[in-house]
Length: 65
Image (tube, rainbow, N blue to C red):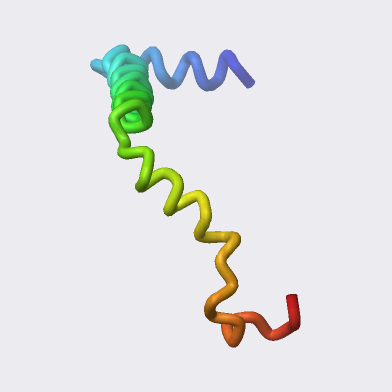
């Protein structure tokens, strides 16, 4: 199975750029996520983390909590 995939990929011109592009996308995404986590305001993080705990709109649930 691997020989079939490897043989097919060897016949494509410029295929060596795809792993580089995917590694760059992966790296840039996680660097941006890391940067956002450390620069986010603490008040925003607390507000968003408490959203699942709020029970103001109880008519959203079909059952009693």
